[in-house]
Image (cartoon, rainbow, N blue to C red; front, side, top):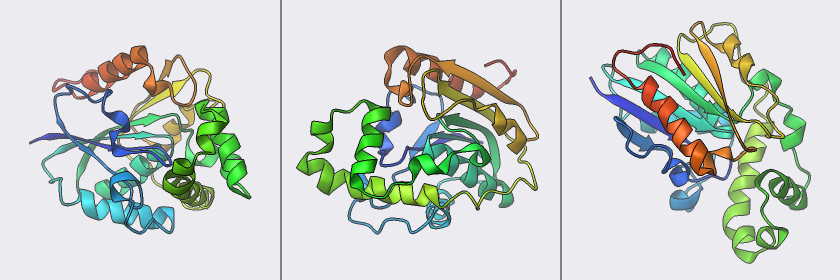
Length: 237
């Protein structure tokens, strides 16, 4: 038996986004990179959330076995991806022990209008507000040519995702929700309890949508994950 943690970044994010958080964890770690992003920028971007999940699942199926204890970690869009991957893994007989969902309300509570944009200027304004990135950076040639296409595609995938989730059958997986107290996109994450027949617990961190970049939060999240990886688990986050 092996413990494996698989991570999924936010929209436009990189597989390296969690490097500091997952450092020194006692498990095997697999950081997924989305097609059309960063190290995979030459590959075709996903057409839909369904396309994204099916493609990632085919990759993950090659690195897990039915005797593994699997843990999934996702931030923002990555939290949705982690949940959908968990559903597929469970359907195929794999053992998913816990989901670490960061900065993302449950699918049926997301305001999809906030991530629906008519043009690139709308995306830049949104990113400036939630990331606090200067507009001069967002207007740079590098951002326009290298990053914006993948971010725009991810937002398109998310804005068309709302009809996909079904709550007809809950998953039996522990869900640990982690959010920033000043996140303009997340009012609460407790609604994830409706998606699991197991325990759902919420942890708050100082900061906004990208609270995971703060050094104190990095340590806090690392401890939360480490506890869930413990062999003799007691529910105490």
